[in-house]
Image 1 (tube, one colour):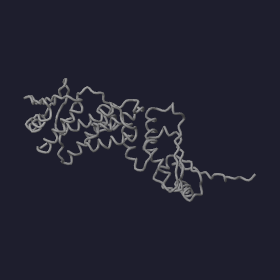
Image 2 (tube, rainbow, N blue to C red):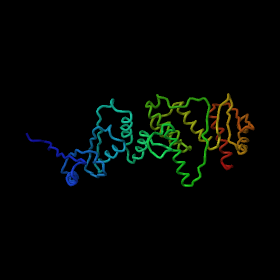
Image 3 (cartoon, one colour):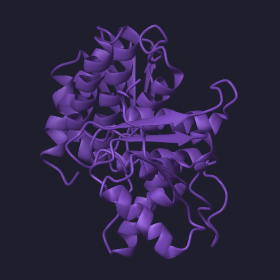
Image 4 (cartoon, rainbow, N blue to C red):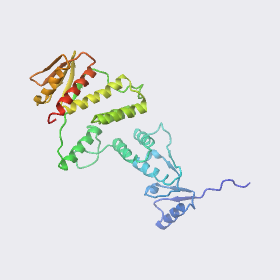
Length: 314
């Protein structure tokens, strides 16, 4: 019987082969004289073979994230659709780190995702010792986001740039503010959203976050909306150098910075909007409100911003 599909031409390549023999095998593969190349991780060493359209990686759970990323990049370098298959013995037998690595690879597949994969690898493995000369250990004690902030501050100081310390405001309004499980079922996705939201520093970034959130998960529930609006409130408080905001009954109490004279213009404007406004000698601004606390707090901060930030050295 005549064979309809020609027999595949197979060759083997590994690092223990003599250089000339290895070169010959790879040259034949490039010339398409070989259909299947069985090899070790030597293939990750920057080879550009546009005709290669499929790679099968055995025991992908034993490779590092960057290594699999390099191996996966050996295919799909031409115009032909390429495929990468990651083989593992069983999903139930994988370690937690292996699961995270494979999940990151499946999540970041678009062009230019190498940087995001590198950050994922950094978070999975740990970034090393912050204060010592060695780079062994983890940053779980301080947190990944704080590590990046400390690193950015140190780099700016070494460049001679002025690093301005902006106080992180504390907000106590007693409102439920979180992304419920019914809205974002996956725990890691919820944690990722919280991390993204914690890094938002202005209203433009917050608007982009809100738009992306709606696009992925739909309109947020009341608890999620509270969290987003509280983030906006913190942005306003941070710009005003207000240290703390708390609710006491029907009053909002703003704990101001040391230079309370700069708030005088804003206090006069607040007094035209709210029925009771008082600035105490201890730097407490008390505002009596009648509507929802979060809405009134945002309105008060907007008035302070418009009256103070545009007319003072803040």
